Image: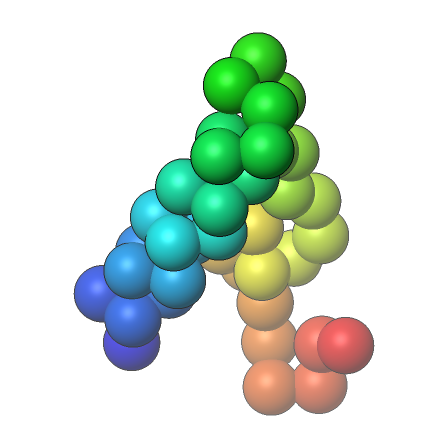
Length: 41
């Protein structure tokens, strides 16, 4: 499943940088930290 996430993140990053080359993407939450559980939101 991580391959799919990495693919999606790469596409989002590319789309953001097409609008603003200086933009940064900051992820947060249990999914971003890698400690999500089945009941995480």
